[in-house]
Image (cartoon, rainbow over all chains, first blue to last red; front, side, top):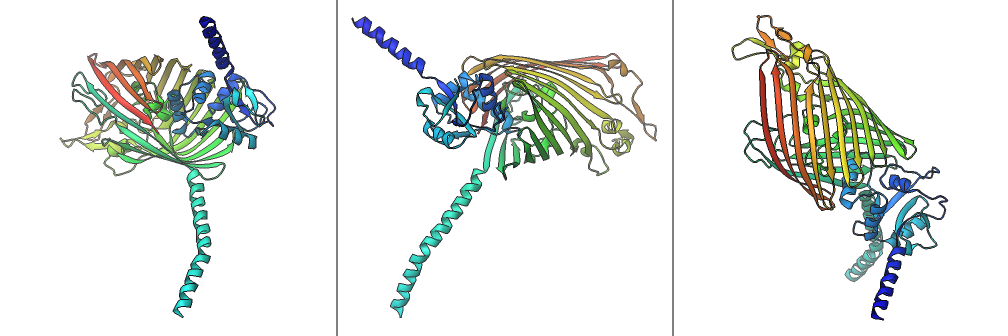
Length: 136
Length: 396
């Protein structure tokens, strides 16, 4: 019986963790979805517009956020040190500016909800009706 | 009367308080608004190194030096309007360097964003000579402890005053960035070698570079050209014996030098591969060079060990022979130039980068240097040395 309870708990936890995943989100006015490559290009400053031409600015969560680490591990395949190294190359050559950062998901959702020109990322469990998922 | 005055004063103060508060608030808002347009970034490299032998290798000998490659920079970016930015990068060195100030303005330029894909820049800018030239001094931006010096060092033009246009072409998921520039820069080495008191300016520095990025791949193709400044007569001097001699700057004055580069980087977050080939061509007898570098690194968590090999060879060896390239002064004194028929140099390096935090890295690198010079008369000179270096490199 005890074994069964442990097994059930493990399965439940596994399902819970599997369900929580980082997603790229935008304003509901954005009517498109993004491929992994497009997300990578936007968050590495290589593109400033969506494939349909809509001008876009990306917003990052702060460096302490575990969701940020998960996002970059999934889409840009870079650690925080590698990201800093990457942006350093652009900043000190004047070829790019580091994205804006916000302190938490609530602030990010609020900014995106009121600005169609912003995209960011949150945990899928935090998605509200104020934003739409653009990439998983 | 006194009482009335006192009450009036208190009443005035009470009435004025909201006005002053409002004024102070608006001033604070204005300061905050201005500060939000300013971004300050910086980098620091603290490097210590020592060579195995006393024959100098990149200015190192057996004595440990912690100042030769220790430097930093502070950059201020001011976002003046939506499309106009001003950037100022000041740099400081731990020890004075020939032909470079120990503290001063490294870069200062205006960037005007014509569109999301096109930028125009003007001011004091970096020469994008090779793949990583733009940020050669920012150690944290690179995997290695230092850029491949056999390729990147000894280029006397690191920056220029002029204009540059950057345009991005989107090709599928990839981007081709075209960078075209034109400008001029003082040549302090030439100025130092002339007794005329003139300031020598390289006034036709120009280049065209293409950078193609797609997923984990980056390809760079570029060409940069300039003419050596001054005239032959500007560099004639009298030696200790009172004889007329000519400095090499006079012999190559007016010659055009062109740099061609082809670079590649692969970076998937684990593997980091860099390869670069450079050809330097010069009019006249100055040796043309072929330079090659290859490095491979692999990330294990915070550690990234790497290996690098660099090689440099002269290309037009048959152009240099005994009795060639001689300057004979009016008094009959001769000065010989380009007396090395071949120059071959190589550096094999191993190193490791350890990311202590997201903006601080520790690096250690060992370099084995070998060279072989063959004189036009057939004599061969060989030398080698080993350099051990450690460095702390940070950005903020």
